[in-house]
Every structure is written in C-alpha cells, then in structure tokens.
Length: 150
Image (tube, rainbow, N blue to C red; front, side):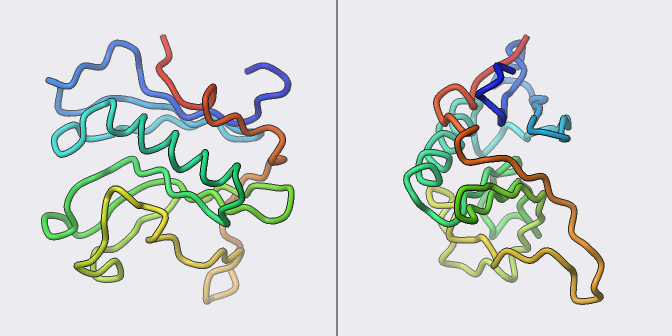
C-alpha cells in the first residue's frame, strides 16, 4: 500500500460472477484479513460499487459506513456480514460485524447499508473490548481503496 493510503478492500481479480463465491481482502494498519463474498444476489461489481459509495459518504462527513461482505435480502437470511467504519473526528475505527436480520427489520435497503450501523461501541455489554483497527481519515481514498487484486 502506498504510504498515504492506509485502507483497502478488494476482491480477487480472478473471481467471476458465475462462481458461488469471490475471495477478498481488507487491509488497514494492523489488519490484513481475507474474506469471502457470496455471488448470487450481488455480483462483483455490486460489492465494489457499494463499497466505493459508502467510503465516499464517510470521507464527505458521514459518521459511519457499512461495507457488506455478504449481501442478500434480509427475508432470505438470518444475518448479513461486513465491516463497519466509524468516523470519530479525524480517525476511522474499523469493526467486523454481523448484522442480524431481526435487528434490521423489513425496511432495510441493501442500496443504503449504512442505515444498519449500530452505534460505535468499544466494549461488549460484558465489558470485553471489541476488536477494532484505527487509522487517520487522511489515509482514506475511496477511489483507490476499492478494487481488484492479483
């Protein structure tokens, strides 16, 4: 990653929409994690487009962004999966999250995933710290952060 870019989320360049899954990778300081996205309801370009839009909103001042890594109508699944980026002043905190269908409700719209973001919490109800990774807002470039990797 270039020194000034501190965050990336990408899908494998060899993935094709005809496959059941695509592999991806999220990267930030202290975080380099693979993930799989199901290809069925959303195609590869749908994920990339959604991620770019969410990151643009965050960069422009939104308090949070939801980068779904499992997109499906909530009527068909028990949960959605993704990463929530919380903007706190000039820093961004990343947390992996499961978004349960019961909490989302029937009005949830995949075109606006950030509407599902719960408030930013750094501890569970039991007082256990929530894993998160923090980087400066200046290290986020929505255009170069999203794409494909070899």
